[in-house]
Length: 610
Ligand SMILES: Cc1cc2nc3c(=O)[nH]c(=O)nc-3n(C[C@H](O)[C@H](O)[C@H](O)COP(=O)(O)OP(=O)(O)OC[C@H]3O[C@@H](n4cnc5c(N)ncnc54)[C@H](O)[C@@H]3O)c2cc1C
Ligand SMILES: *[C@@H]1O[C@H](CO)[C@@H](O)[C@H](O)[C@H]1NC(C)=O
Image (spheres, rainbow, N blue to C red):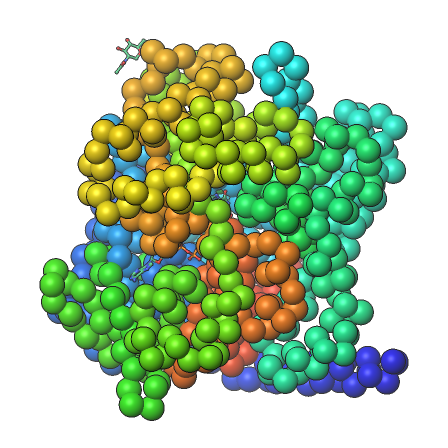
């Protein structure tokens, strides 16, 4: 056993060294690229000049190094990495603005963001923050949420319990123990398990990056489970682990509530995925100052500086292949016409299903290797978003920089099963799980941008099939039945919201509308309205899956980036970009970014000391 372990270690070290000694010109994290903070631009028109550059063939740069399909953070992030080493990259987006889940839209004067409510792991000089600073040249600013960033609210109106979740391991433990006397051991053990599991994530990256035969060796010898606690815990359900720790039903709920950030109820969730999300927010939660459109707004100029471009209203309708079955470009549908764009490399941020089922020619889609990958993946649950514009400041409305996770009951498995299986009539009348947050209250620039106003966003899950019959209608006019059904969902959500936020009353609402799974299909290209792309259930954390779904596809010159190739969430999709960039540039960018973070941390500290 010991000898095998040693052999593996040697192979891993060689594998790592290969990356360390590759040329610095291919390292996007070779130098500290942060620039002094420029004056903030809030004017929408000015920002749209960057975010909404419409596609015309004449704007396509020539001699491209790569084309990226989709402008989510997985696509833009990768484009930035490539641009930083001088590559000319074209990003194509089907929607009318860049950003994917990070885009924002404005209705009746209220700006809403779509898929960014809070991001963790940004404390001080954390490696993740350093990486983001580098990828936005130091221009993207983060605002911390309250110390109690999440509130878990359980039970019906008559018997509602609220548990605040605090940032910082010590405070997290202390506050939970205060609320659950007698459960000290369970609480300590939970956090210990979560941290130990998260620590093993390095092997997830290695399995995606190392040569496939090595990955297979690690898997088939069972070494993955010995090397990393992550893969030891991956096949265990969140429910099973937590139920062993405590009998207290509210505490079980508090341990598991964050399943909403990846979408699998405790019975189906992998304890490994859950550990990642729990630790992600352990040091606190942050929101991008001036809203999530800032992310794309500060990434695009870096791509352009290297000669690349980010063009919108550019739906790719197929990937082009040469006779040797190598990807060699894409076709963009402009009205009825196809515009062909040639590039030596095509990378897709559009997700596995879109890429393999919609963009490949039939004969390539039928390849056994492609079919094998498709057989591993499953569509994630659909999302429901309610956007509310309010007349009143955060003080007047009692809104804070935090989130509420409101559940009708503490048994999440039963609650989710009933909700999603009961049929839409029942479901629409009583949504048992609601995430509620005020983006405007999290943003210190809001008051200046929209004085006297506030926003509130409500998020939940919804089945694609509930809305499927309207999928071919026009997005803003799908007919009265669709509107009516949306209204029932809106009203039942509002009833809960007004209970929990007593200062919010109907007369304060200036704008309200709901986005359903078919809305997600239209605006973010989610084929089944998925909130987080490919399903994150236990099967996804099988090491076999981890190693098979990697940036390289079975087709030469075609790569995958974004949440489907790594994990969901802003950090997960960026992890996809880093992983894909590693493969393309033939070096470990996770490591490069970490090393630069260590260096800048040291410099920052020295500056402080002087
Ligand atoms: C409601 C909601 C709330 C969320 N909240 C949080 C949160 O608080 N914190 C967090 O960390 N994460 C959150 N997430 C998740 C996070 O936003 C996503 O996981 C991440 O941004 C995904 O990035 P991506 O680049 O992989 O994909 P996307 O952002 O989905 O980008 C894919 C892009 O590809 C485009 N596209 C698809 N097909 C084509 C085509 N044929 N041609 C051209 N373009 C195409 C799409 O239009 C889209 O812009 C949330 C998600 C949702 C939906
Ligand atoms: C907003 O509320 C104020 C009173 O607080 C009122 O004077 C104003 O007319 C309201 N605006 C709208 C658009 O409803």
